[in-house]
Image (cartoon, rainbow, N blue to C red; front, top):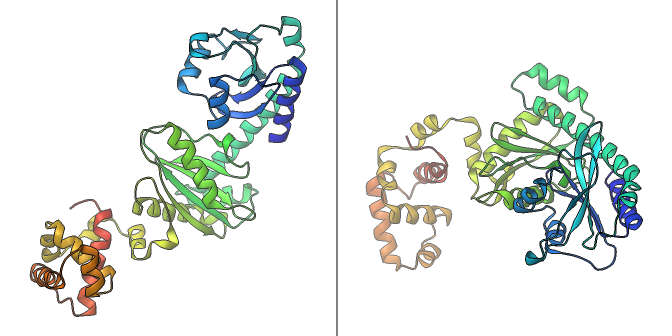
Length: 363
């Protein structure tokens, strides 16, 4: 279908003798075709970033393109270097699905020539309507696969024809922008669920990390802050998508802002999936460990010491302190926590607390 829309765009550019750009109704780039070397900042932005800016969208929509049933001419803004262009609304059954833009600063495309492109616009409208309907239906099915109701999940799994295994990813962004599925591979399903952007990626022939990187980039273009992602890389059946989503959520929760982490990389942090914060805090935060956490220097020292498996030399070097200073700090840590750092069980107790506590809501 994407190839067909590319062909429509190329044929429109050739027919009307002008550079053409096809965008969806949210101003995300679908296809473009060159005709000569004419370009302006708006066209360049759309091609380079796969979408037009909000300022461009606001300006163009003021000319009524969303409701127009025929060509609309957008005048130039030569002070800003923006050329005049012709907008051909891409519609089907009375619904606008996108816009074909032709750079036409000299207004060479008259009414009759613009009308000759109507069959191409109709063809594009039909294709975009089909794609929107298919993606919408599959997005609803993905939401059903995430349902808490076992019967709903089972029915949805039977209704969806998707190759398994699949990967499930969760993306968390500031703001309320919805991830545009047009800019992701067609086989990828998307929805929003409990505040998450959720992706389902069929694994045969598809690298989930590259899909997630693309989705993060799209969200970061519109978000006011970094986008964090978590991936559960292997879900054997569609009935397991909800559990895979829970694991991907845990990975997203446990990673740094603006980064991606997989479930398989979490280690002890997997406990975050099955225990609520209150229970975990009660289990790991003894009075002594709580006292330690009020001292940032000693907390960092203890964490690094344990991550280095109790090795003195690399810990002292990483902290930039003398070994004797490190020994002194370790003695203070033992006194505060009432733990013996020469025993494996006490080390495990402290290490688990220091690993989990940054990801828990304070008691």
